[in-house]
Length: 173
Image (tube, rainbow, N blue to C red; front, top):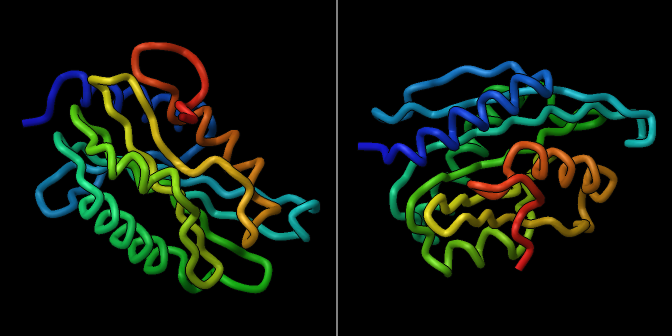
């Protein structure tokens, strides 16, 4: 059973993704409804590349580091299956694997903030949202690999994942 606050946050995320021009739908992942948003952007300043951004949001009451890592790997595989033929040369993929819950283990919060994960022509910035504590955790710094996308990814994270219960930027503590 999904907590009402978790449901409300995911519904609001869907609205934010839609308002930003994402193609948004829900998919069944092993019996759980998962929100999937996709957009692609092209910028000359990104060395004339196109970036596909997939935002994948799932409910999970209690989130441990292993849960976040497993979900991140699953979203990488999903992105590679969906956009795999397009990756490389002038096209990249970024993924926001996002778990929304009522209790985020402090180690999972720390893991989400530690670094951007990288695979061939793909990056992931895991996100955890604790609706009870009103916090959001994710990597927000500039990464060495894919640095040209860092500002764009930070802006999208700020837009898609405000702290629950208040308007504003992500928790950067």
